[in-house]
Length: 271
Image 1 (tube, rainbow, N blue to C red):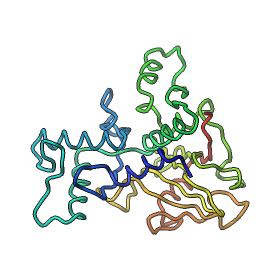
Image 2: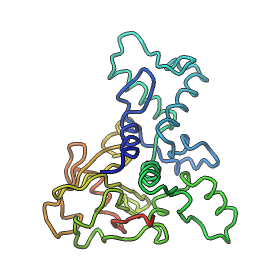
Image 3: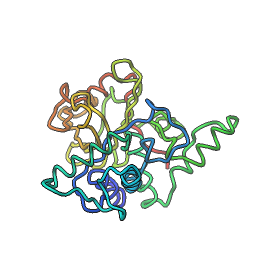
Image 4: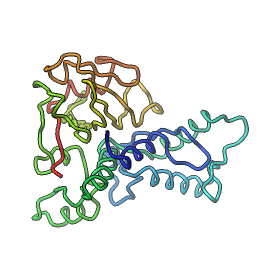
């Protein structure tokens, strides 16, 4: 498994730490459609759980939405049960573009993991731009989490390829903290995606990711857990059984992202 602090951050994304409201799964939000620059991490899909929570409280109080009181405590009352309360807040987050994207999720979890296990700040180790592009280089150094895209994770200077996803896979050589990168996927080959392995046991690869499946509509997306069952030992990733949200392989949109990707690789950070 990952380290305790990394697991704690994962759990907080699945149950955002709102005061007075439980069971709120963090939605997915990708800033590339809006292209906002220089914003807080929570506003561009890169925020930690507590940053997303605090921004939601600020927006609610500032614009009098009535979800939280002046102390930030959830004040939804009446006939709302816990499930309805959680759903109301989730919809509020989505309607106000608050959530996390796949690389922001991976960056936050792996940052905690390597700080705890190796005392390393991955933001300081990552390379984003050559120094000749000074301003871009400087901005990335000052705001590393905000600049950790899937392509940055996939750079050979930042990670090494352990396996080609379309070649033979040896699960004994895969570790918690390894990632699967999917480049140029989706209907128009314009999307990139990343999933993070959290545990490997008995031929089962457990992973987490932040994603938006088309089948889930406007309000169903968010962080998710899944598994890859190595039902064909020695085979490639796409020959295995992918299970997520009760869906398997062709019905599983994460599997389809992997299948349609131009580049599908298992990689390990160079830390």
